[in-house]
Image (tube, rainbow, N blue to C red):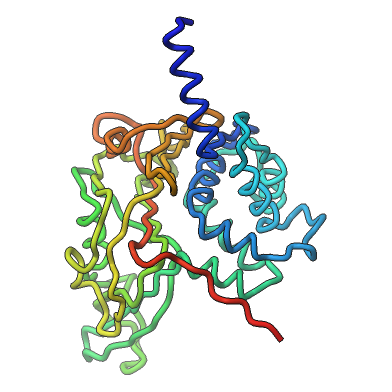
Amino acid sequence: MSAGICYCFSRLTLVNHLFGMRGLSNYCLSCCVNSLLQTFSATWEIAELLERWDAAGAKGDARNVALHLKRVLEAMRGDLPQPAPHRDFLHCLDQNSFRLNVQHDADEVFLSILNFIHQQMDNKVLAGEIQDLYKISVETNLQCLKCNSVQTETSYMLSLPLYVKEDDNSLEGCMNSFFEHQELRGINSCFCAHCGTKNPSRQGVKLLSLPRILCMNLKRFRNSRGSTRKLDCRVSFPETFDFSQSLQHVFSGNFAQNECRYTLYAVVVHCGYAMFGHYTAYVRHRENKCWYYADDSHVQQTTWEEVQRTYGGRQSRTAYMLMYRRDSEEWRPRPELSG
Protein backbone atom coordinates (compact mmCIF):
# COMPACT_ATOMS: atom_id res chain seq x y z
CA MET A 1 0.00 0.00 0.00
CA SER A 2 1.46 3.39 -0.98
CA ALA A 3 2.17 6.13 1.54
CA GLY A 4 -0.49 8.31 -0.09
CA ILE A 5 -3.17 5.63 0.29
CA CYS A 6 -2.10 5.02 3.88
CA TYR A 7 -2.36 8.75 4.59
CA CYS A 8 -5.86 8.95 3.06
CA PHE A 9 -7.00 5.89 5.01
CA SER A 10 -5.68 7.22 8.32
CA ARG A 11 -7.24 10.61 7.63
CA LEU A 12 -10.58 8.95 6.85
CA THR A 13 -10.37 6.90 10.04
CA LEU A 14 -9.68 10.09 12.00
CA VAL A 15 -12.67 11.87 10.47
CA ASN A 16 -14.97 8.95 11.30
CA HIS A 17 -13.48 8.77 14.78
CA LEU A 18 -14.03 12.48 15.43
CA PHE A 19 -17.64 12.43 14.27
CA GLY A 20 -18.60 9.16 15.95
CA MET A 21 -19.41 7.23 12.78
CA ARG A 22 -19.01 3.55 13.61
CA GLY A 23 -19.56 0.62 11.30
CA LEU A 24 -21.27 -2.68 12.11
CA SER A 25 -19.85 -6.11 11.32
CA ASN A 26 -21.83 -8.35 8.99
CA TYR A 27 -22.91 -11.13 11.34
CA CYS A 28 -25.13 -13.92 9.99
CA LEU A 29 -26.33 -11.91 6.94
CA SER A 30 -27.06 -8.77 8.98
CA CYS A 31 -26.51 -6.16 6.24
CA CYS A 32 -30.24 -5.28 6.24
CA VAL A 33 -30.32 -4.61 9.99
CA ASN A 34 -26.90 -2.90 9.85
CA SER A 35 -28.20 -0.39 7.30
CA LEU A 36 -31.34 0.28 9.33
CA LEU A 37 -29.28 0.79 12.49
CA GLN A 38 -27.26 3.46 10.66
CA THR A 39 -30.52 5.28 9.81
CA PHE A 40 -31.75 4.96 13.41
CA SER A 41 -28.42 6.36 14.62
CA ALA A 42 -28.89 9.32 12.25
CA THR A 43 -32.43 9.77 13.65
CA TRP A 44 -31.09 11.41 16.81
CA GLU A 45 -34.62 12.08 18.08
CA ILE A 46 -35.07 8.34 18.80
CA ALA A 47 -31.81 8.18 20.74
CA GLU A 48 -32.85 11.17 22.87
CA LEU A 49 -36.21 9.60 23.68
CA LEU A 50 -34.62 6.23 24.53
CA GLU A 51 -32.10 8.00 26.79
CA ARG A 52 -35.04 9.33 28.83
CA TRP A 53 -36.41 5.83 29.29
CA ASP A 54 -35.62 4.15 32.60
CA ALA A 55 -35.15 0.62 31.27
CA ALA A 56 -34.59 -0.97 34.69
CA GLY A 57 -37.77 -3.01 34.33
CA ALA A 58 -36.55 -4.49 31.04
CA LYS A 59 -33.03 -5.45 32.19
CA GLY A 60 -32.18 -9.01 31.36
CA ASP A 61 -35.02 -9.28 28.83
CA ALA A 62 -33.32 -10.76 25.76
CA ARG A 63 -36.49 -10.21 23.66
CA ASN A 64 -36.96 -6.49 24.37
CA VAL A 65 -36.16 -4.69 21.11
CA ALA A 66 -36.34 -1.20 22.63
CA LEU A 67 -33.79 -2.10 25.33
CA HIS A 68 -31.26 -3.53 22.88
CA LEU A 69 -31.80 -0.71 20.39
CA LYS A 70 -31.09 1.78 23.18
CA ARG A 71 -27.82 -0.02 23.96
CA VAL A 72 -26.60 -0.36 20.38
CA LEU A 73 -27.35 3.30 19.57
CA GLU A 74 -25.33 4.33 22.64
CA ALA A 75 -22.44 2.18 21.41
CA MET A 76 -22.65 3.64 17.88
CA ARG A 77 -22.20 7.15 19.29
CA GLY A 78 -18.87 6.16 20.82
CA ASP A 79 -15.52 7.43 19.58
CA LEU A 80 -13.87 4.04 19.06
CA PRO A 81 -12.71 3.25 15.51
CA GLN A 82 -13.70 -0.43 15.52
CA PRO A 83 -17.24 -1.60 14.62
CA ALA A 84 -19.89 -1.12 17.30
CA PRO A 85 -21.06 -4.27 19.14
CA HIS A 86 -24.57 -5.21 18.02
CA ARG A 87 -24.90 -8.99 18.25
CA ASP A 88 -27.25 -8.78 21.24
CA PHE A 89 -29.61 -6.66 19.12
CA LEU A 90 -29.43 -9.18 16.26
CA HIS A 91 -30.15 -12.09 18.60
CA CYS A 92 -33.02 -10.06 20.09
CA LEU A 93 -34.58 -9.70 16.63
CA ASP A 94 -33.95 -13.41 16.06
CA GLN A 95 -36.11 -14.14 19.11
CA ASN A 96 -38.77 -11.84 17.66
CA SER A 97 -39.09 -13.92 14.46
CA PHE A 98 -36.46 -12.14 12.31
CA ARG A 99 -34.09 -15.08 12.02
CA LEU A 100 -30.34 -14.89 11.64
CA ASN A 101 -28.83 -16.22 8.40
CA VAL A 102 -31.94 -15.20 6.47
CA GLN A 103 -32.27 -12.29 4.03
CA HIS A 104 -35.02 -9.89 5.09
CA ASP A 105 -36.87 -6.96 3.51
CA ALA A 106 -35.61 -3.67 4.98
CA ASP A 107 -39.01 -1.96 5.06
CA GLU A 108 -40.61 -4.95 6.80
CA VAL A 109 -37.85 -5.05 9.44
CA PHE A 110 -38.05 -1.27 9.92
CA LEU A 111 -41.81 -1.27 10.54
CA SER A 112 -41.53 -4.30 12.84
CA ILE A 113 -38.84 -2.62 14.96
CA LEU A 114 -41.09 0.41 15.45
CA ASN A 115 -44.02 -1.84 16.37
CA PHE A 116 -41.88 -3.90 18.78
CA ILE A 117 -40.79 -0.68 20.50
CA HIS A 118 -44.41 0.41 20.83
CA GLN A 119 -45.48 -2.96 22.25
CA GLN A 120 -42.52 -3.75 24.51
CA MET A 121 -41.63 -0.43 26.16
CA ASP A 122 -43.17 -0.12 29.61
CA ASN A 123 -43.20 3.69 29.33
CA LYS A 124 -46.13 4.10 26.96
CA VAL A 125 -45.78 7.89 26.76
CA LEU A 126 -42.23 7.66 25.37
CA ALA A 127 -43.23 4.70 23.18
CA GLY A 128 -46.00 6.85 21.73
CA GLU A 129 -43.60 9.74 21.11
CA ILE A 130 -41.24 7.47 19.18
CA GLN A 131 -44.09 6.26 16.99
CA ASP A 132 -45.36 9.83 16.54
CA LEU A 133 -42.00 10.76 14.98
CA TYR A 134 -43.00 8.68 11.93
CA LYS A 135 -46.80 8.82 12.03
CA ILE A 136 -48.41 9.92 8.74
CA SER A 137 -52.11 10.61 9.34
CA VAL A 138 -54.40 10.18 6.34
CA GLU A 139 -58.08 10.52 5.51
CA THR A 140 -59.59 7.93 3.17
CA ASN A 141 -62.78 8.78 1.29
CA LEU A 142 -64.79 6.01 -0.35
CA GLN A 143 -67.56 7.15 -2.70
CA CYS A 144 -70.21 4.70 -3.88
CA LEU A 145 -70.63 5.15 -7.63
CA LYS A 146 -74.27 3.97 -7.43
CA CYS A 147 -75.73 6.30 -4.77
CA ASN A 148 -72.80 8.79 -4.46
CA SER A 149 -72.70 8.45 -0.67
CA VAL A 150 -69.24 8.95 0.87
CA GLN A 151 -67.67 7.05 3.75
CA THR A 152 -64.69 8.69 5.47
CA GLU A 153 -62.22 7.15 7.88
CA THR A 154 -58.89 8.25 9.34
CA SER A 155 -55.82 6.05 9.80
CA TYR A 156 -52.05 6.33 9.96
CA MET A 157 -48.94 4.83 8.41
CA LEU A 158 -45.34 4.78 9.61
CA SER A 159 -43.93 4.59 6.09
CA LEU A 160 -45.33 5.78 2.77
CA PRO A 161 -45.37 2.90 0.23
CA LEU A 162 -44.70 4.36 -3.24
CA TYR A 163 -45.36 2.30 -6.37
CA VAL A 164 -42.50 2.40 -8.89
CA LYS A 165 -43.36 2.22 -12.59
CA GLU A 166 -41.19 0.35 -15.08
CA ASP A 167 -39.96 3.62 -16.55
CA ASP A 168 -38.24 6.80 -15.41
CA ASN A 169 -39.81 7.97 -12.15
CA SER A 170 -39.53 10.97 -9.85
CA LEU A 171 -40.35 11.05 -6.15
CA GLU A 172 -43.00 13.70 -6.77
CA GLY A 173 -44.58 11.57 -9.49
CA CYS A 174 -44.63 8.50 -7.25
CA MET A 175 -46.36 10.48 -4.50
CA ASN A 176 -48.90 11.90 -6.93
CA SER A 177 -49.72 8.33 -8.02
CA PHE A 178 -50.21 7.25 -4.41
CA PHE A 179 -52.73 10.00 -3.71
CA GLU A 180 -54.67 9.94 -7.00
CA HIS A 181 -58.23 8.59 -7.00
CA GLN A 182 -58.76 4.93 -7.85
CA GLU A 183 -61.89 3.22 -9.11
CA LEU A 184 -62.63 -0.12 -7.45
CA ARG A 185 -64.76 -2.48 -9.54
CA GLY A 186 -65.49 -6.19 -9.87
CA ILE A 187 -63.92 -8.23 -7.07
CA ASN A 188 -62.52 -4.98 -5.64
CA SER A 189 -65.96 -3.39 -5.21
CA CYS A 190 -66.66 -2.14 -1.69
CA PHE A 191 -69.66 -2.53 0.59
CA CYS A 192 -71.91 0.53 0.70
CA ALA A 193 -73.73 0.92 4.02
CA HIS A 194 -76.36 3.10 2.37
CA CYS A 195 -77.19 0.61 -0.42
CA GLY A 196 -76.53 -2.50 1.64
CA THR A 197 -74.61 -4.12 -1.24
CA LYS A 198 -71.15 -4.21 -2.77
CA ASN A 199 -70.90 -1.55 -5.48
CA PRO A 200 -68.21 0.00 -7.69
CA SER A 201 -66.53 2.77 -5.72
CA ARG A 202 -64.03 5.59 -6.05
CA GLN A 203 -61.34 5.80 -3.37
CA GLY A 204 -59.21 8.82 -2.54
CA VAL A 205 -56.55 9.46 0.11
CA LYS A 206 -55.71 12.87 1.59
CA LEU A 207 -53.05 13.93 4.09
CA LEU A 208 -54.22 15.01 7.55
CA SER A 209 -50.77 15.58 9.02
CA LEU A 210 -47.10 15.01 8.23
CA PRO A 211 -44.60 13.63 10.76
CA ARG A 212 -41.26 14.93 11.95
CA ILE A 213 -39.55 12.02 10.14
CA LEU A 214 -41.05 11.11 6.77
CA CYS A 215 -40.07 7.62 5.64
CA MET A 216 -40.85 6.47 2.10
CA ASN A 217 -40.46 2.97 0.68
CA LEU A 218 -39.87 2.71 -3.08
CA LYS A 219 -41.74 -0.49 -3.98
CA ARG A 220 -39.17 -1.98 -6.35
CA PHE A 221 -40.11 -5.63 -5.89
CA ARG A 222 -42.85 -7.33 -7.91
CA ASN A 223 -44.43 -10.70 -7.15
CA SER A 224 -45.62 -12.64 -10.17
CA ARG A 225 -46.47 -16.33 -10.60
CA GLY A 226 -44.74 -17.36 -7.42
CA SER A 227 -41.49 -15.48 -8.05
CA THR A 228 -40.16 -12.05 -7.08
CA ARG A 229 -38.20 -9.70 -9.31
CA LYS A 230 -36.61 -6.33 -8.68
CA LEU A 231 -37.09 -3.16 -10.75
CA ASP A 232 -33.85 -1.23 -11.20
CA CYS A 233 -35.58 1.59 -13.10
CA ARG A 234 -34.68 5.19 -12.30
CA VAL A 235 -36.36 7.05 -9.42
CA SER A 236 -34.94 10.55 -8.88
CA PHE A 237 -35.39 12.25 -5.52
CA PRO A 238 -34.34 15.71 -4.25
CA GLU A 239 -32.21 16.58 -1.25
CA THR A 240 -34.93 19.00 -0.09
CA PHE A 241 -38.67 18.80 -0.74
CA ASP A 242 -41.59 21.14 0.03
CA PHE A 243 -45.06 19.59 0.13
CA SER A 244 -46.77 22.99 0.18
CA GLN A 245 -45.27 23.87 -3.21
CA SER A 246 -45.48 20.54 -5.03
CA LEU A 247 -48.28 18.49 -3.45
CA GLN A 248 -50.65 20.91 -1.75
CA HIS A 249 -53.55 19.30 -3.62
CA VAL A 250 -53.14 16.11 -1.54
CA PHE A 251 -53.85 17.97 1.73
CA SER A 252 -57.15 17.33 3.48
CA GLY A 253 -59.35 20.29 4.31
CA ASN A 254 -58.36 19.70 7.95
CA PHE A 255 -54.61 19.87 7.24
CA ALA A 256 -53.25 22.65 9.47
CA GLN A 257 -49.42 22.38 9.43
CA ASN A 258 -47.44 25.41 8.30
CA GLU A 259 -43.99 23.87 7.86
CA CYS A 260 -43.92 21.26 5.09
CA ARG A 261 -40.30 21.51 3.91
CA TYR A 262 -38.18 18.37 4.34
CA THR A 263 -34.48 17.54 4.00
CA LEU A 264 -33.17 14.08 3.12
CA TYR A 265 -30.91 12.59 5.80
CA ALA A 266 -30.83 8.81 5.17
CA VAL A 267 -31.11 6.40 2.23
CA VAL A 268 -31.23 2.61 2.48
CA VAL A 269 -29.77 1.09 -0.70
CA HIS A 270 -30.38 -2.37 -2.16
CA CYS A 271 -27.83 -3.90 -4.50
CA GLY A 272 -28.36 -7.09 -6.45
CA TYR A 273 -31.42 -9.18 -7.19
CA ALA A 274 -34.69 -9.82 -5.35
CA MET A 275 -33.61 -13.14 -3.87
CA PHE A 276 -29.91 -12.40 -3.55
CA GLY A 277 -28.82 -8.90 -2.59
CA HIS A 278 -27.00 -6.62 -0.20
CA TYR A 279 -28.05 -3.55 1.80
CA THR A 280 -25.98 -0.44 2.50
CA ALA A 281 -26.90 3.07 3.71
CA TYR A 282 -26.11 6.73 3.17
CA VAL A 283 -26.62 9.00 6.20
CA ARG A 284 -26.20 12.75 6.68
CA HIS A 285 -24.36 13.70 9.85
CA ARG A 286 -26.16 15.95 12.31
CA GLU A 287 -23.15 18.10 13.19
CA ASN A 288 -21.04 18.55 10.06
CA LYS A 289 -23.94 18.02 7.56
CA CYS A 290 -21.71 15.74 5.45
CA TRP A 291 -22.91 12.54 3.80
CA TYR A 292 -21.42 9.20 4.91
CA TYR A 293 -21.62 5.81 3.24
CA ALA A 294 -21.96 2.75 5.49
CA ASP A 295 -21.36 -0.72 4.08
CA ASP A 296 -21.38 -2.96 7.17
CA SER A 297 -18.10 -2.30 9.04
CA HIS A 298 -16.80 0.07 6.35
CA VAL A 299 -17.78 3.74 6.76
CA GLN A 300 -16.47 6.62 4.68
CA GLN A 301 -17.34 10.22 3.96
CA THR A 302 -19.00 10.79 0.59
CA THR A 303 -20.97 13.40 -1.38
CA TRP A 304 -24.53 14.16 -2.43
CA GLU A 305 -23.48 13.35 -6.01
CA GLU A 306 -22.67 9.80 -4.89
CA VAL A 307 -26.08 9.51 -3.20
CA GLN A 308 -27.69 10.52 -6.50
CA ARG A 309 -26.03 7.53 -8.18
CA THR A 310 -28.61 5.35 -6.35
CA TYR A 311 -31.44 6.73 -8.50
CA GLY A 312 -31.09 3.54 -10.57
CA GLY A 313 -31.51 3.02 -14.27
CA ARG A 314 -28.38 1.24 -15.45
CA GLN A 315 -27.23 -0.41 -12.25
CA SER A 316 -28.74 -2.58 -9.53
CA ARG A 317 -27.48 -0.37 -6.68
CA THR A 318 -30.71 1.49 -6.07
CA ALA A 319 -32.38 3.53 -3.32
CA TYR A 320 -35.05 1.48 -1.55
CA MET A 321 -35.99 3.59 1.49
CA LEU A 322 -35.79 7.38 1.85
CA MET A 323 -35.92 9.25 5.16
CA TYR A 324 -36.59 12.98 5.29
CA ARG A 325 -36.60 15.26 8.34
CA ARG A 326 -38.95 18.23 8.56
CA ASP A 327 -37.21 21.62 8.52
CA SER A 328 -38.64 23.45 11.50
CA GLU A 329 -37.67 24.81 14.86
CA GLU A 330 -35.31 22.60 16.87
CA TRP A 331 -37.16 19.48 17.96
CA ARG A 332 -37.80 19.01 21.66
CA PRO A 333 -39.35 15.94 23.33
CA ARG A 334 -42.49 16.52 25.32
CA PRO A 335 -41.84 17.43 28.97
CA GLU A 336 -42.31 14.51 31.35
CA LEU A 337 -45.28 14.66 33.68
CA SER A 338 -44.84 14.02 37.38
CA GLY A 339 -47.25 12.88 40.03
